[in-house]
Length: 324
Image (cartoon, rainbow, N blue to C red; front, side, top):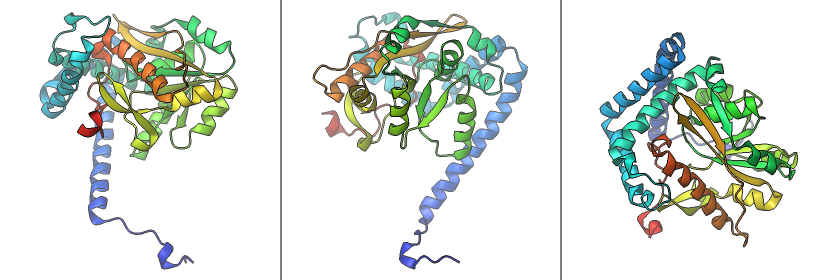
């Protein structure tokens, strides 16, 4: 029998919240059933055929899911004028709708590849992934202060960590727990391989400091909209977006190197390319440093506009007044 007094007992969830939680749980379970039903044929098919069918599936989703298609095209349209001002932009990339269509195809390919990776059929994918610019990684490691890899939801971001862990050395990926716990466990099984590990964002600072002090590597997907109390409004693709300043603060405190690294498709294989480390802003302003890190992601998007995750609303929770 509980000895807690009534005032310390947890208040029951309002009926409306319980209904939302039930609906969310049902949706996640249906998603897992769909995942399982898709996984079986993917695992039975050869890699190249399965990935090709994944692209077809992505294009089919583009046609059938009108709301998601319109949202994705709107995200590209909002950034399109700004992209045109950046060095390296190629107008041959096409209209926002054409970019969105190719983006969905890439998501379909990525989904198939992740299934292959999850069920242990990813060796061919990893073996066909080339690492370029590793000299920038080793130069940063020589300083002995640790490395924070700055990346985003580019190409197959799960494969990037696998390839680096297999062909170079492991990293700890900073991630958020999923609202549906079984999905969290599924992703843990995928990510805790090849010398890699996960650091969850809640209470991550101590673990990150510990790993950097040992000259370890941290991987951070920086292109996610964080809650307002976890970051700052920093420009991204021409608009302000809630952005984590954690890498900038960590680099200032520990001396860790900030090294951009991104994956992209090149024909029938993947490339993971690392670039020279980004020096923090000389004034020590974390927002100014974060702005430099956002620019690195923008430069990737300019070169590979259909391999970034445009379906995600990078600018959510930003009001019109905040955009100015």
